[in-house]
Image 1 (cartoon, rainbow, N blue to C red):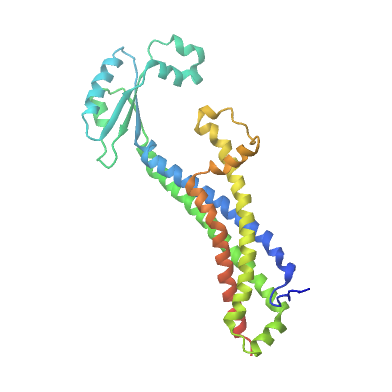
Image 2: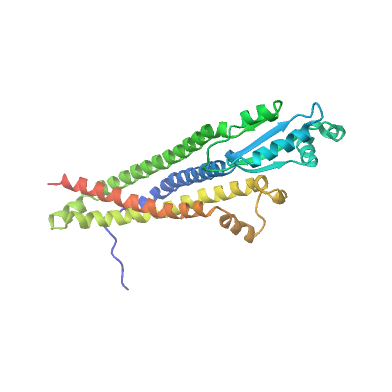
Length: 302
C-alpha cells in the first residue's frame, strides 16, 4: 500500500487555528461591505430622487388657497427648472394628517393646499422664495436641497468608515498570516536550512508555504463570508416591510428551504458580487504576505 509522504514545510493540522481567526476578520469585513453598499445606495437615491423634491403648503386662512394654488401651478409649470408639479388631493392630505389629528381631521374644512414639485436635474435652481413672495406670501416651503450637501457628506463619511473597516480587516488578516508563517518557519527551521543548503531556491520554499497560507486563507474567507453574508441577508429581510408595504406580513425568520435560499437571491446584485470576491481577495492577500515574509526570513539565513 502506498503512503503519501508528509510535507515538511507546514505544521499539518496544527496551523488550522488560523482559519477561525481569518473567518472572524472576514465576517467583519463583509458586514462593513454591506454598510458601504447601503450607504452608497442611499446616497444615490437621495441625489437622484429625494433631493429634487419640494413641498409647498398654502394655508387656507382666507379661503382663497385653491385659487392661489392654481395660479402658482401655472407659473411653476412654465419654469424650465421645474419638471413636474402636483396638487395633492384632499383625501391624500387627510391621510397624511391622520396620525396627528385622528378622527378630527375629517371635520376640518380649511385644510391647507399641498403642492409637490420635482426639480429638473442639471438645470439652474429656481428661486422659489421669490416666486412665492409674489404669488403666495403665506406659503410654507420645505426644500430638500438645503439638506442635500450635508446628507451627501454624511453618506460619503459612512462609506469612508466602511472602507476603513475593510482596510483594517485586511491589515489584521496580513498580521495573523505573518504570525502563522513565522510559526511555521520557526518550527521547521531545520528543514528549511537543509533545503536551502541543498540548493533549493527561495522562490520554491516561499511558494510552498505561500500556497498553504492561501488555502487556509480561502477556507477562512469562505466561512467568514458565509457568516457575514447570512447576517446581511437576514437584516435585508427585516427591512423589507419598510421598503415594500405589501410585505408587511413577512415573517422574521424564513420558513422552509425556499425562503432560506431567497435570502441570498434577495440581496442587491452589487453587494452579492462584492461578497463573492471576498474569499479570493483574502486568499490573494494571504499568498502575497506569506511570500514576502518567507523571502525576508530566508535572506537572513547564512
